[in-house]
Image (tube, rainbow, N blue to C red; front, side, top):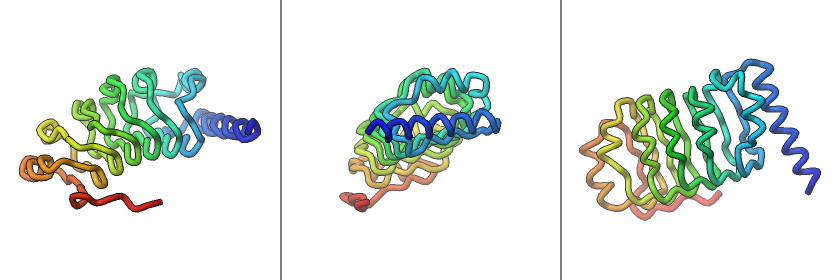
Amino acid sequence: MLKKMGEAVARVARKVNETVESGSDTLDLAECKLVSFPIGIYKVLRNVSGQIHLITLANNELKSLTSKFMTTFNQLRELRLEGNFLHRLPSEVSALQHLKAIDLSRNQFQDFPEQLTALPALETINLEENEIVDVPVEKLAAMPALRSINLRFNPLNAEVRVIAPPLIKFDMLMSPDGARAPLP
């Protein structure tokens, strides 16, 4: 067990160092068994955090993200958080004014993260395979850059299915009523 933990920590350290040393605009910590974003990474990345435009934290075990994460990486263009245990986003997600795409698929959202509707550059939202019933259709319709929202395999209420199509100017992907996600 300790050996596996040590290997996971070493993998995270190696990936962070690669980002710093190469001057990359990408931090990929997918599949690192993270239960939270490691605090030490803020210190290591403090001189390059503004140039990081893509962070991938997919397929970890994250239950939440902190406000510090959102304010530290406020230059993000893309945030990939699919396959975690997230059920909400901090209000400081509003600091991500340049964010164009966010992937929150295969998480545990029961409520639509409405803070996303305040992001002016956001073009793509992926919330596939969550537990969302209601969606703020009017707020989504008012988003200037939104082009696509994926809500497949969510138990959306009938009202959203009826009201949304005539109000929106973007692609809204929904599963047929009652459809279930395929088993992995």
